[in-house]
Length: 173
Image (cartoon, rainbow, N blue to C red; front, side):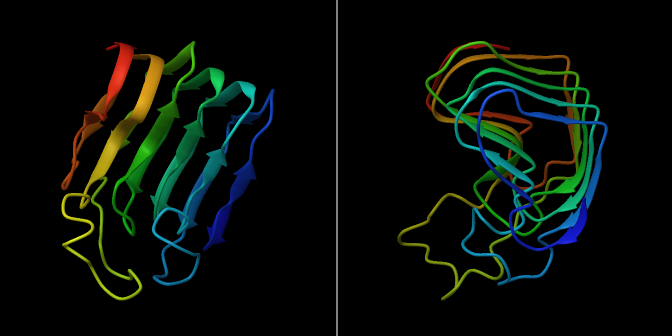
């Protein structure tokens, strides 16, 4: 999967597997793919169970790479993320939220997530978006439960955290 500017994989459902792929050059042109969260998202699984994201290379991605919302029995492991979240803010290479169980984030490498507020329609609104200039390597966003985070490497995160816990509970890290 390469050279697209909107969402690359959208949807959800049970028994989804993304394995052994190289995914690169996604969402790199500003103003070409919707709002801040849609611009250059590789994968946005919004529901379902039993999801596996493993042995993939994510390189040069504008926004979220592996994003799962409220799904249970999810494993995100042994992936490599480089130069991701380069055209978005308040996002992560690996992004998990929702109240769920049995989600594992393990043995991933996340490097060079930078973040950006460029390309926002109307410009940056500091009154309404004062603190979201962040690009996390691993982002457990609100509300978030039932996640185990182990054996990951995060480096070169410029405007964010290696691992960010945003109103997260029942997390093992």
